Amino acid sequence: MNKNFLALGLAAALLAPQVAGAEGFAINEWSAEGVAMGGARMFAEDDAANVAYNPASITKVKGEVMKSSYTYLSPHGNYKLYDGAGKEIEDGKNVVHAGWAVGSYYVKQINDKEWFGIGAFPRFAMVSEFERESNASSNAFFSKLNGVSVTPTYAHKFDKKWSAAVGAEINYVGLELQKNSYDPRVQMNVGATQTEGESYALGWNAAANYAFDDKNEIGVVYRSRITHSLEADFKMYPASGGKITADAYGVVTLPDSWDIGYNHKFDKKTRLELKATRTNWSTYDALNISLSNPSVPGVLPSNVDSAKNWSNGWRYAIGLEHNFSDKYAAMAGFAFDEASIPYNGGDFMVPTGLRRTYSIGARYNDKKQTVAVAWGWMDVGNLDFAGHATDAYKSAHAYDSFTKIASISYQRKF
Image (cartoon, rainbow, N blue to C red; front, side, top):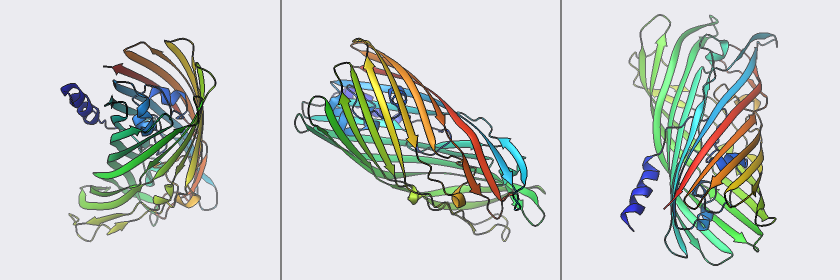
């Protein structure tokens, strides 16, 4: 193992960014090429981002490569709020709070049979913001989940048909929640609260590819669920003035998932990928926070509970890649992501319905470097959800929501 290998591998891990995603929760935008193909990019040749999309395909990398990717996501949307009689009491829109999904990847071919790779990229992240004086703020006016996964990976090529990989996942989450405290007895906000904390947890992944022939290949990737025990600081700012603090604790389980992909090469220039992702969102059954050691005893509740009860869901993607020459290529993709949020489990943290993503991109490469760009439009869809007992509304309707996506990647061979 040479010094260059160690330095680049460590750099890929240490560049793990603080990431805030757009409306949604699962992040699939791990490279410009991946964005361009709707996330259906499990079988790319010589692409270090295979560490994220399909670890078994790092066996398609020749030599030693490093890659960085930057994806800009800008969410937009509107909502309406209703009282118990179904009368509209407010209409508004989110505060545009764009986020970045940043990926860093490194892959080293050790010999003809073995590869090492490491990536730092977001699997789960979100950010949403609404006007602080709105009725929606009684549920949430600022919510952010920063997420980064660092994934050291070992891959082995058994023969011309079979390859497999196994890896660890070091997952970081930083959570910040802000909302107004609404008292339904007096029908007004009586203060504001902020919950902020972070956690590290471990998971793992495994993948396998099988090539039927030179034109057809299938692959499967499994990523384990990851349970975070989150220690946080809770602050309340009463309308009458002052500040109350407490220790907060909660458990959040990020779901496990399966990716199943198929790759078909029509000829040496054109190929098509299909991908289906099953995510077990049912692990997100509640967001319960326990409070202890308040600075003003007897004022705060011991628990702040919020039922979610999300359902498991599928994401389907199709991606097309065409090489015009040895240097220039174009890509296009489409993805459909099922809605997993039930009526009684929705909120303004993640006001997201089903998602349709349309994307295009282009790539330039020579013997040493690759540059790719992509643009996408995500139609987030509508979502209806019920208010909680402490919300200033009985039901909500999120509509006309969309996210603008732009991405750029740079890869260098050594």
